Length: 423
Picture: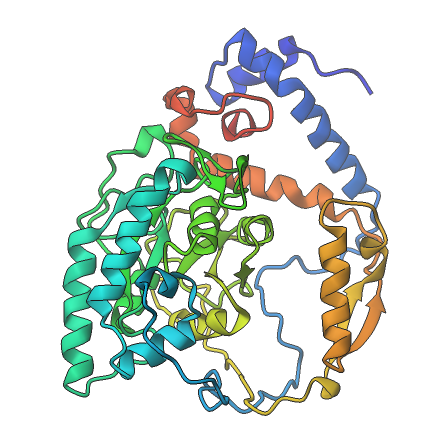
């Protein structure tokens, strides 16, 4: 097959009404060759004429019965709590303990919020995980939470708990920068659906956290977000600030988003628990769009139980996001590990990769819980070749940015960065 040349790109520019520089054309060459290989791989799969494309995403199997709906288990036996001598110790408490402490009067939401705000200010110079503090909003919410709890109004387990939002969620009255220089002064005059639902749950928003510019990586216009475990390393992304801040005890929990690994990767890098929900479980209204068919929003916390509490508050149908559904969220309080079967990709666990030891340890934990581990193998399809779907949707979402040449304002101008992929 003939090699793609800068001249070929220049000819194609005439067809779509755009013009690139010589340097931009050179940077595009390898990516275009990759795309051509993807197309060839997909053409190697035999598709029958009557095979329907995935017009609608619904992972529920025909005839599947819904399990009983339970809230996250609050009746689990827990050790008694005491007010710590140093309130900084609260920073790493799980949401379940923070919620109990607030209701037992061990501390107030105002005290907790002030402590997290102090930690955000103290540690952000090393971590670069904060884009905007929402201090005035947070203190007003904390005072209201304390008043409501004292008067017997309890909005649920997140009531009075400080949290941080990835800065692609709109918050009225504050910049929503998407981590990118062209949008650093952008004000979106509404609250995202997730922000609204957490407001209704009584949670306290303390900060808009950093994200890799336009949801790629951990580099934004303010620098590179670092992991608190080793500040020589990046926090991974694109939910970089959510991962770093949660791990460092700067928030009670955080919200991240994922199109392709942006919750899973920073959760792994920062040693926290991330829940990447099934597409359609959480409304994306008021969130930056990168890929309309792949974007998902989920909690990033310090435990699986915390993720359950947060997910219970944010999931469900929202008419403003037509992809959302109402599905049950079962959380059986008396679930026995020996009743579960867990599938895992055995071939992937056998490969050599960074973090392999941790993954192997996780399997051993599941075994110790009595869970039956079942090795599985996925069909051999060229799945990675489908990533051009993301590239096409992202380029469409930011078409104006490319055509106006404002993509030159983005910090990362390398082969593996959005400006090149948009082109």
